[in-house]
Structures are given as structure tokens and as C-alpha cells.
Image (cartoon, rainbow, N blue to C red; front, side, top):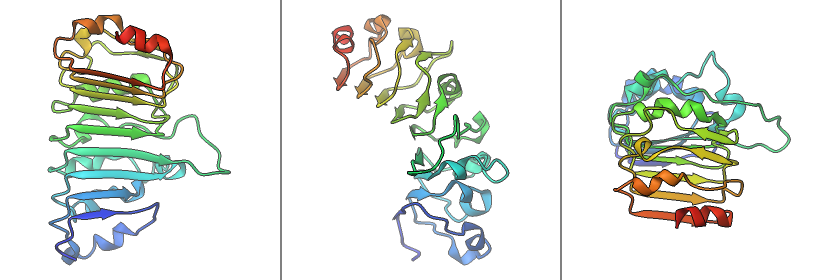
Length: 226
């Protein structure tokens, strides 16, 4: 299917390595791929997808913690990628590890990446500091259990180019940041963060801020937004 542009998969163990042995299987028109297993995130596979712009990587915890096979260093092969999502599927009856996902080094992220999303990855809040160094990152979405821990102390460099930040279903209590950490933020969306006390007071000085949307949160969060 050489003209295929969008491919959406459920949890799978497609053998991308076998496909990579056949150059005739290069999908040059594929732009959006979702449900791709982390075990198939290798340079040999990514060469078959030279023009992918949107990629969702999805697997269970066991897939992500196989350090011998998964490190995501080859993501840099996707030169056209602008949107990247990581998702870990919860499996009933399986153990949940304290952590199951390690961010790749800065050089591994595609140079044109401007949107990132995480769901159930159980990152530590301090791990996010590396994301602030991505030169074109404009949107960051942290979904259910994306990060663990009750305190988010934003690193010194912050997120200088971020325009959209969405926090959903996180067990975050204290968020310590200043307007200098998010100087270009335009939209802040917080949903179902029941443990959060407030947004940082200093955000009143973010001159680019156009929208703060709060839903299903403590009343104190809405008050701090006002």
C-alpha cells in the first residue's frame, strides 16, 4: 500500500525487523502512525518511514523496560517528525513498576519536534528538564500518570518556547515555577488534577498568556487562576 498516509494500530508485536530487510516496503507517503510498539523503534525500521510527521509509541511496561532492545536513540532518524506521543498501556493483573520509561538524550529527539505527549509513563518531574532544551517544542501534554511525585520544581532553564501546556489526571500537589520558566506560554489547561493546590502566582506576569482552562480540580486552583 505505497500510498498509505495514516495507520492506526492497537497493541501489537509486528515484526518491524523483518520488514526492514525488504527495501520495497518503504512507505514514503506515511505521515501518521499510532500504536507503534517500542520494541520496533529502531533505525532499520524508521528508514522505512522517512516522512512520518506524527508518531505515537504504545506498549505495556514490559516493552518499555527491556533496556537491551529499547532506548529510543534512533528517533533522530525521523527528520520530518513534528509530533511524538508516548503511551504505556495498563494491563489488569500485571505488576506496576515504580518507573518504566527513561527519556532518551537530547540528541535523540528529532530536530523539528514541536509537540510532545506522555501518558502513564511514570516519569519523575525532574526528568522533564531535558524537554525544555528542545529548540522547537511548543506543546507539551502530560496525561494520566505521566509523571510521579507530588512536587514539580521547574528547572532553571524552564521551557522558553512552550506555548501550550496541558496537565491531566496527575497527582501533583505543589507546582513551583515562575513566569521566567514559561515566557511564551499562551494556553494552560488543567483537568482532573484533584491534588493540586494552585497554579504559580508568578504566572500573572506571563504577558503572552491568553487562556487558562481549569476543570475537575480543587476550588483553590480556580481561585489562583483568577
